[in-house]
Length: 289
Length: 119
Image (cartoon, rainbow over the protein chains, first blue to last red):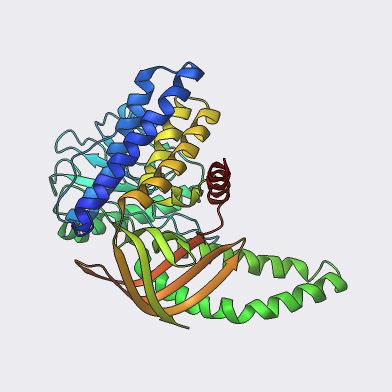
């Protein structure tokens, strides 16, 4: 298996791991009195969500995966809105709503969330298909967990993190219609798959902020010591600075390619680069600081 | 005790997502989910060692490095990863590495081996 292409090795490895896990936990499930059916469901879910990500990564943005996982929470709301929607939840936590061709009665809009506090989820991309216009046949809506808003005939706000809904809606109805025009060029394919939409802009910011972060590290430690002596007044602004850098860290985390492995030599690693998964038994490299 | 390092991978995340759904629909208990995750850790650790035998090379510039709780975290920029078959370029990558040599399991197994030899 040493020289086989990575694309063959990775799914095989994943499948064997899933099989192992399912078999190993079967006894545990039975001890707990859980039905075998649940075990099978777990297996299916793992395969579905895991391999969707895998196949998406391999095929790229042009083709659309056909796997659909109904999410009971969201479908409840959608059915109430007279829509037939299906939700795919990818392994990275993003949820994709696939909208069928016809039967689009409502205008749906998703508010891009750019809260100043730095929401962990990136900006939401949204594409709509109002019925009469009949624009793009199938559109996908990318929704981060807990950020869904439906406007139109029925207004339902599912999460509570939406800030200032009314003025925001007014703005978005104006901008929202411009966006579908720009976006269909990108999303001729049935699914919109731009989870990392904000990644491009934020990385530029991150670079600048990273440098500041590194430089400020030593200064902050000194300031904290002084602050402790002087009293609590200085600690609050210091703490807020800490929060800012933490959120930057989270942004970094969300948009980065990740390698997890073991050292002393970098070994037994799983990489996720540009959306694809790679595996190695040993990695060697040079990086200059 | 295998590392939970691999939980934040495509497969690990899909497992956690699936378990969360089962918990929310009350088909399993959180305790059971934890057991499953621990089993996953063992499975993926051992499978990686058994099944994977390829090397990778990389080159880039080191942006940050951190060593905390015996875990290395690097952030590299403008990196090229080289597998046998392909070349992958990324603007930014985070590498998280746990200590690969002193896991308790290694010690335990090693001790067992030595004891067995002495019999």
